Length: 164
Image (cartoon, rainbow, N blue to C red; front, side):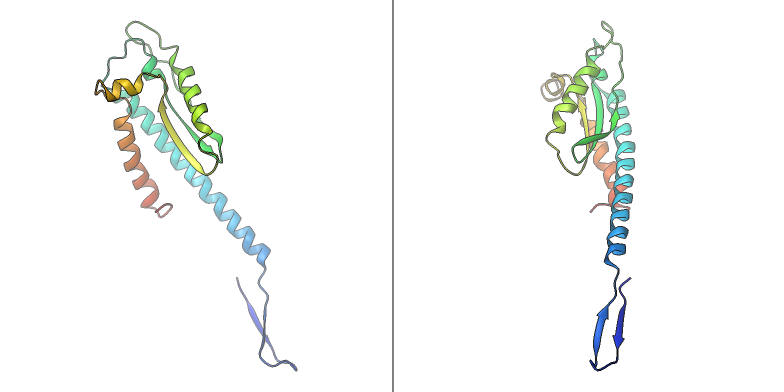
């Protein structure tokens, strides 16, 4: 894009830069927007897969259905949600899981404030006792999904040169 022109006039050896910096800036902004769209698309694929794995591979006994129903994700771009992986209601043996989706939405909304810039993927289990079940009872709520997320990020982003 940069072009130099040498003029031979009374000023010998004068080099004039004729680069169109507005065109350079437009090209960079277009590339940035393209990379952001690609990153959001990849994060959506990763978020869907992680939520699916977390719901299917949970090693806990979900009696009310709330814990499994409270698993969801959101993708933020500069603090604003661009993709909501809506949590779905699952029934347990003694409940219909109706408290799960609102708990996931509340937790995801509270976590949004912590990430005011950049593109962020958040996967959560919204029920307040999910961490207890995982840490004290040693049951798998999100651990398998977290490990999967790390491998999927390496596979889909670092191998393609998007992120180092």
